[in-house]
Length: 300
Image (cartoon, rainbow, N blue to C red; front, side, top):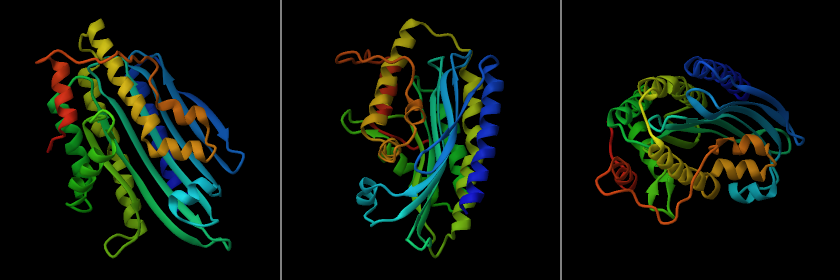
């Protein structure tokens, strides 16, 4: 399973970076191949200062070895070995009318000292963080997510949409990071889904990513904007940074397993503002977004 999924994310990284380069038309992804001393490594691809994409990363990794003690406590296990692989991406467009997007699809195994698998699961999802709310874009993104889920179980979309709204939430701000999407974790074999079924589900969601995001980019990337729009974008990016550094479990796992710091923090945007006690003007488009972030809604 681990070889099969790692092969899949290698191909998915190629298809996503190729499509995004075509959309940008100017910037190309820079590739770094890196090695983790404790075992494994990855392939980081970053795009910067493009016509459409100000900064973005599409990374894959496959790491293995002894599970660090800090993570043993987190998973409530003893001295075990692990293997983890996944694709993680964050794209920060230049135009404030185009939303930031995040996605991650991953697989994890743990082994006893004889090398037998003692636990295994899939996780992942995809979510959208707009700076200006176009409801038709939110509806499109969620409709694609729902379609991917419905191929396997009609209960998946409402369940994983709710988990996304719950997870990507800045509790210290009492607001969501964005307008959500899907979030699922610890997807293990059960009476209804084998590991092969979970593989098929997760790869279906992965395959849906470009369909969910690209039409939104193409519709909004040439819209006019001004300096005030950029200021708002950078203020909202600050909230994105806060979530990733305060709450995100993937960032925590990477830091505690001696992950590659440049790959872990590639999700952070290049230009950010923190304005003291900032509140958007009442009735403005900016305030419209805030109201949705404070009260997540059903989009489909």
